[in-house]
Image 1 (tube, rainbow, N blue to C red):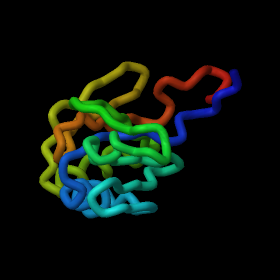
Image 2: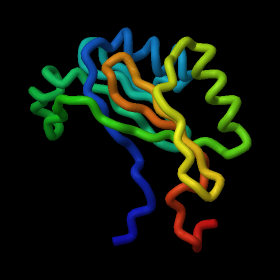
Image 3: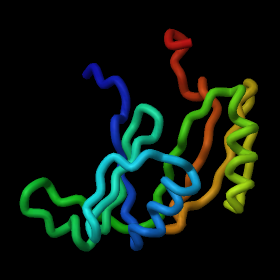
Length: 134
């Protein structure tokens, strides 16, 4: 298979207004699609973050049903030279950082949560790259 990357990923949320206030209002992700009471979609760099109300999207008749439950984990990548300033921006938004981790090799990441308690992480660019991509 010649898969290039994960283009989009999905979270299941309880309150679209709180989700929008967090991802658009605090993290400044562009809203690229929205159906009130059902879903909101954001651009996250080159990727797309889909946020669905599980109970509603799970009843879909047009597309395969999107539904699920539980706290999930996503990691967002940032250029190494912008890592510290992004961490400060998150803290300035009064979003608690749960932990920062040193992965070795000069790579750091930090963890925080969204309104639905999904665990979000910011990682320095270069983590998990194959040697041919560097």
